[in-house]
Structure formats: C-alpha cells, structure tokens
Amino acid sequence: MPLSKAQLLAWFGKLDTVYAAQKEYLTALDAAIGDADHGINMNRGYGKVMEKLPDVADKDIGTILKTVGMTLMSSVGGASGPLYGTFWMKAGMLFGGKEELGAADFARLVAAGVDGILQRGRPARGDKTMYDFWAPVLDVVNARAAAGDDVAAMVAAALPVGEQALADTIPLQARKGRASYLGERSIGHQDPGATSSCYMLQTLRDVLG
Ligand code: ADP
Ligand code: MG
Image (cartoon, rainbow, N blue to C red; front, side, top):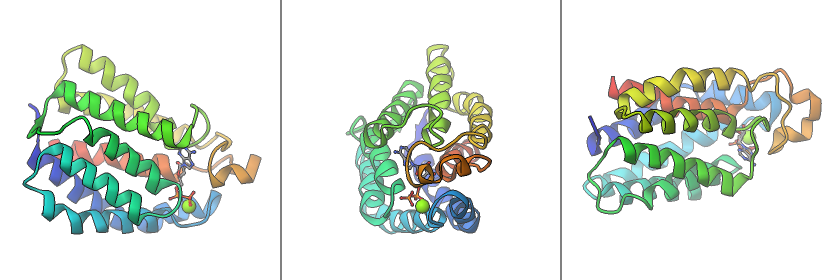
C-alpha cells in the first residue's frame, strides 16, 4: 500500500501530539547534555506546522513537505530547526505533483531527508546526533525497498534497528553541536535529537498500523 496524502497529514498531526506530550522529556534529555530547549523547540515547530498545514492540505505532497520544512526552519531556533527543516525541504523537492508515495518514493524521501541532515550538520556516525538514528534506518529502508517491501513493512523493519541505534547513543561521546562542549561528560546520556527522530518513525508506524 502506498502512503496516501491523508496518511502523510495524519503523520504530521500525530507528531505534533507526540512532541507536545514528550516536551518535558525531550527537554530533560537536552538539559543533561545541552541547553534544555529541545522539547520546547520541537513542540513550537510542530505547533507552527499545524497552523500552516490547512493552507496546503489540498496541494501536492511536494508542496506539503516543503511547507513543513520551511516552517520548521523559520520557527525553530537552535540546531534542530535547520536540520529538520532541511530534511523535509529536501524530501519535498522530489515530489512535485505527487498525490501519494509508493515504496520506492518513501525510500527516496528518507534518503533525501538524511542527505539534508548530512549537508546541514556534517555529522559522522558515532558523533552522538540524530544521524546516529537515521544512518542505520536508511540502510534498512534501502535494503527493504530493494527487496520489494511496501511502506508499512519497511517502517516495521527499520524501527527496531532505529530504536537500538537510539539506545546506542547513550555510551557515545558527543562530537557535534552543544553537547560536544561537554566532552566526556556527554557520555551516559541519550541524544535528544536522535530521540525526537525516533518519534518520527514510531509515529509513522502508528499511522500505518
Ligand atoms: P541546540 O543544540 O541548538 O540547542 P536542539 O536542542 O533543538 O538545538 O537540538 C539538539 C540536537 O540536534 C542534538 O541532540 C543532535 O541530535 C542534533 N544536532 C546538533 N548538532 C548537529 C549536527 N551538527 N549534525 C546533526 N545533528 C546535530
Ligand atoms: Mg538544545
């Protein structure tokens, strides 16, 4: 089954709910190794996205994703606004005129989004960032797309790998962003941005399930 526009919009709506519910938790994670604003940032960003989405809900998927990206870019301060903003803007550039996303499209969405994170933040694997979640997820998505999985099966296969990768950020020492200022004291804490990224995939699983 392809990912319909209605499911895509439901994904953003659910993400807004999740970021509101997890605002304090994400901020507590960021308090440990950053400046205690990640939950506030995500909550504010998706609140703005929900204000903007009704204007473009009947437009093509490319326009919807680019609107999400531009809204996050302009409303979220800190590192995560430009990173997630670029994720969705890069993905949106692929889907002008599209009304639904097939399995191959979904794999291209994830690849373009992760490429946006790489271009913006220049993270490497093991730097203790959101890229540590996305790099193995992208590997699974690409492998499952090549094997002919549909979107739901791809997400189901990628999620446990991503959840493990999220837990695996705990022992890492941060080498990018504010957390890197802490040096070895960043060890022993889960990365906030990898956590908010994991919510993206968990929420999509819930929308598709
Ligand atoms: P800030 O660090 O500016 O306060 P946030 O707290 O909203 O911004 O986001 C912090 C998250 O951003 C980190 O947990 C990490 O996952 C991600 N991040 C920071 N710098 C980079 C980078 N250069 N590349 C990829 N991700 C990064
Ligand atoms: Mg922060």
